[in-house]
Length: 79
Image (cartoon, rainbow, N blue to C red):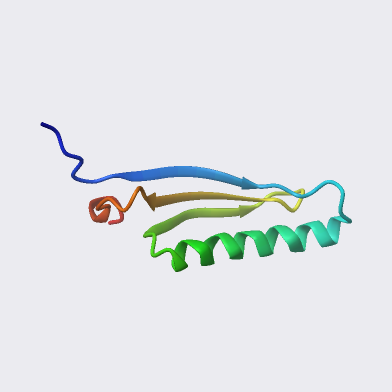
């Protein structure tokens, strides 16, 4: 029998601008979306670590994140 002892996801998430909005409004909307995403992780008690958060020249945001998977233990990955 096998058991998962630890699990972690490494993701690259690209929060893109909505094309049907004015650029300034779209950039603000992306920043709000990123803040909402982080708040959602906190609210759900998901352990995570933002490795890199970069604003792209077009105003979109690229995040490299390491996060807990399926409530599995991920302590060894978060060090």
